[in-house]
Length: 334
Image (cartoon, rainbow, N blue to C red):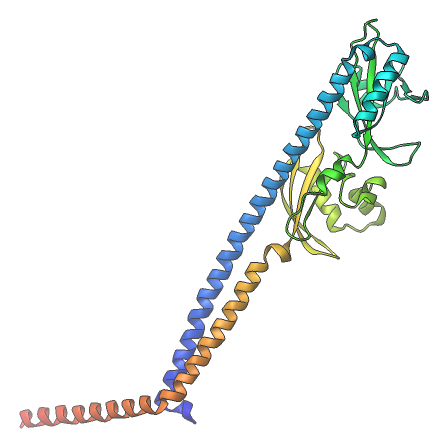
C-alpha cells in the first residue's frame, strides 16, 4: 500500500498535523468566543433590565405627579362633591390613561363619580396615603369588571382641613402595554413581577389577569419549573443574571433588576438566538478543516511519485556518502 512508503507516511503526517493544528486553534477560538459572547450577553441583558426599570420608574413618577396635580385643584380641594365630580369627569374624558376617579374620606369610604361607594379603609395603600404620601397599589382584580386595575391615591389638602384622598384607577394592563414593546432578538421579551413573585406585566395578558405566580404554582403542583426558579432568583436578589430551561423555548437567558418599590423587571433572550453566530463559526471551522484535509490528500495524489523519487535519491546519495567516508577512514588507517 502507498501508505507504507516514505511519501505516503509523510503525507499522513502532514494531514495529521493539519488536523491537530486546526483542531487546537478551532477549539481555542470556540472556547474564547463562547466566553466572550456569554459575558457580552450577560452584560447587555442586565443593562437592558436596568434601563427598562428606569424608564418605568420615570413613568411612575410622571403618573404620581399628574395625580398630585389633579388633587391640588381648587375644585378637588373644596370637598364639594358636585364640584369634584364635574371637574374629575372632565379630566377623565380628556385623559384616556385613567379608568375612573374617586374621593376617599377619612372613614375610608371611596365615593366614585357614578355615585357608588366602596369601603377601602383596610387597604394598605389607603392607610399609607393617609400618612401624607402618594401611593401606587399592587395590581388588583376589579370586583365590578373582573379585570386587573392599578389604584393610585394622593392626599388632598382640603380647604376644610379634613383628611381625604384622591383615588385614580388605571388599567391593570398598563405595565404589560409598556413591556410588550420591548424585544430582544426575534423571540426575547420583558416582564414584571411584584415583590412576591406574581406576574404584573407580561406580553401574555392572561398571566396578569389570572395573577399567575410561578413560585406558588410550583409549590402547589410539586414541580419546580424553570419559570419558578427564575422568579425565586429575582425575589432573592436585587439584580443579576440567570439562565433557566423551559419546555417550549429551551434555554432562557435573563437579566433582571429591582425597582424602587420592590417590583422586579426581567428581560429574557433565547440562547439559540443569541449564540447563532457561534454555531456558524463552528460549522465554518469543520468545513475548513475538511477542505484543508482534502487538499492535503489531493497534494499526495499529485506529488506522491515526485516525493518518493526525491527520497530515494536522497537515500542513495546518503549511502554513497557513507561508503566514501568509510573508505577514506580505512585508507588513513593503513
